[in-house]
Length: 80
Image (cartoon, rainbow, N blue to C red; front, side, top):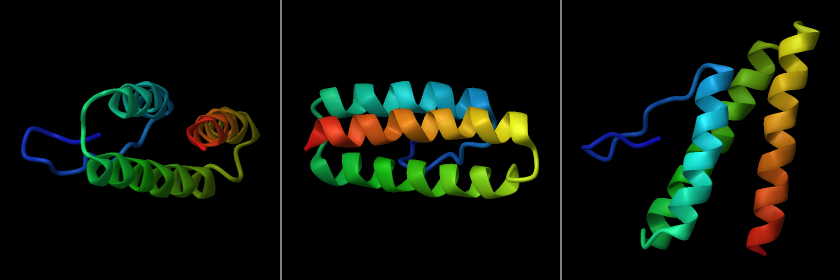
């Protein structure tokens, strides 16, 4: 997610994404500004898209990242 200086830390591993999704949900529940929330969501989605493309040829990893994508979609639906 974001470091102490407000810079985005790119997510790379499945564990990063799993923990990152939890952190994103926590961020949304916090008092953070909408700008920070929207930025975190956009960065998360961008990193996830890159990971999905990176692992497209690996069926097992592709399924793991697809499950994160499904959870993210459910989270976005709940925001509406």
